[in-house]
Length: 312
Image (cartoon, rainbow, N blue to C red; front, side):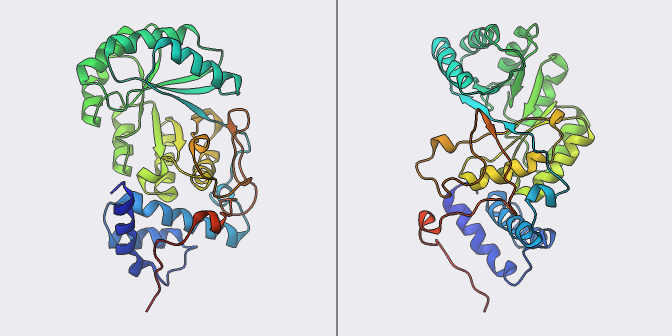
């Protein structure tokens, strides 16, 4: 379940099966979680992150180096441009550009005529080397998505999750030439292999919390690289801890296949690790060099534990 009470219930269910395991053995812990509780990937993701952090600290290495080596090239952050009027969209994107952003996620998926007008206006003002993704968030029917994709073929633009399901995306795939990124429909490794095998998309939108954590996301990365698929790698939203985890995985992707990451730190009411970890500098995140995640949260800022589990 991808909501707070459901995640807590999932962790409570798995906890008896994880106590006394060596957290450095991330695959052993992953297997124990999958056996104890099939599915419920959001509940597994924070445990997986903690295990990688412990393993990295024990080895004295950043997680990205523990995974085989990370690029130190700063990762571009994708801006988030909501469903707005054409004038508002121009203003918001201009502000992001002044801050150094080179990647943008523009929300579409509503009224088709308004979406088409916004897309054409954004493309008119596109800067050199900018990455622009039009994110429909499953908002179009097959017919609506196809209409937009065919009407913008001269622009060669990229759409994220234009329809509800992989079946929808597959049904219209032969009828357009747009670049497609799959986001919400990329949940399991089986989804990744289907997308790659059937040529359903040129881009994976890998959100670590949704897919079950770093361990499972790394397998999706490998599928993508084996098939020449580009990637957006992101936390679903959260603190600098989640951003650091996603950035460590993104650093293991060759720059040519890593389009952007995402960070919502500017939207958070509380900073649980002030001054630490990857921070937004000129529209980019920079990889921490200290062991593990490279972030040590302020326990006072975190507050009291929701639950404590002990072996009996």
